[in-house]
Image 1: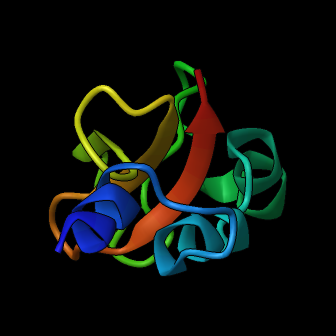
Image 2 (image 1 turned 180 degrees about the vertical axis):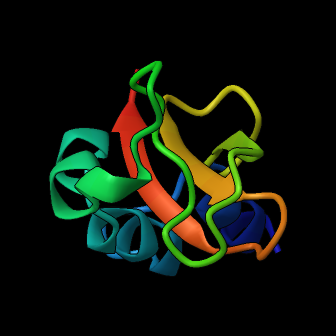
Length: 83
């Protein structure tokens, strides 16, 4: 049981969470791929539903340095960042 708990708290580089994060584009790549979704202030928005309501969350927990930005309207994962 301790191994399972340890695995989820400290995932390896082969964990499904890490692979999910690595599959997402970086914010700069996202903005280059979807230039029409960048508003006048320079902030990107969702290319699926065009919403500007976005949520920045940690990959495994709220203080994780690996971040995923998700659209709050359609729940699409948009890009990744690293703090």
